Length: 339
Ligand SMILES: Nc1nc2c(ncn2[C@@H]2O[C@H](COP(=O)(O)OP(=O)(O)O)[C@@H](O)[C@H]2O)c(=O)[nH]1
Ligand SMILES: [Mg+2]
Image 1 (cartoon, helix red, strand yellow):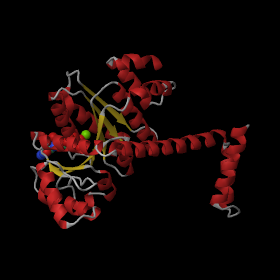
Image 2: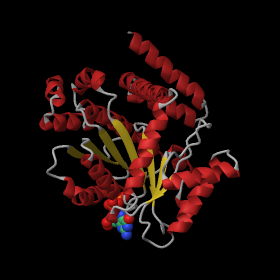
Image 3: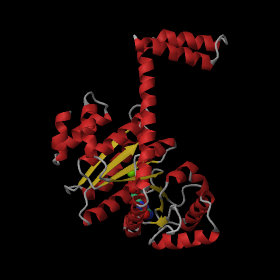
Image 4: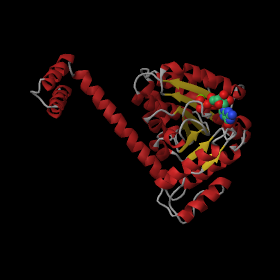
């Protein structure tokens, strides 16, 4: 595996594909490669796109990729589907949608489907992003199906997170989960050619206003700028109010504005030490996740199944309470790991 790092760095696409497969399957030896390539990461701008199925994520990704390519930037697209193994069809649809990008050496497209736990997928996504980063792509676009906590986890691997909505997906406000608004740096209402777009935009803005403690006047100013996409923040204020952008991905409408907004967000983050702080938070969250996974794995590797069953029985019989049971299990691990 580690032999693939040099070829990866010099643009070998087969090495790239093999490393991504190894990451996806948690193959033995992949960690050595990840360790070796880690110093080469941190250069790509990672953009996450999330939203319900059918909102137009893949279409938008395709349009964004075309714009970046026209500027001479290289683009990697990672389509992550945490929903179920049954959405293989969606990925197939993506392939067809993104077909117009094929044949361009400056573009690399890869999909990852669910396998194992959600935590495993979030981890694999982070590692895959690093492989693509070390391979030298300027932009990494991570498309994730919006499905509860998963896209929040996966968005933590991105610097700019775009949440995509479309009009007419049930009740406007209901369709927008609060947790999703929290992770959004940019909100896109795609399918702006469809009826109901105004009410979706209005619902989103109302939710944003509720979430951001700013005065009405500032809001108006913000939105005025956000729509025209100049500087979506007031220079005097240390916050970023997520702009709401309307797009028609199938017609390429609003894409220039979207690209400009992503750049404005990048500029915002690269000022005043913000990028440093963001990365610090992301690294910390990742380490906590990994430590937790590792400790759980270690515990269950030394804990005999009978011991767990025994404790479960005791809890069920009310002779042991759950927290005391946990303490027993943890003590078991300490004794056995120490041996
Ligand atoms: N009318 C309309 N259809 C769109 C638009 N964007 C995407 N679509 C269509 O919506 C369907 C789902 O798009 P897709 O990009 O695969 O959505 P995803 O599931 O979020 O990746 C496809 O048939 C697209 O052609 C748009 O702006 N307007
Ligand atoms: Mg898609």
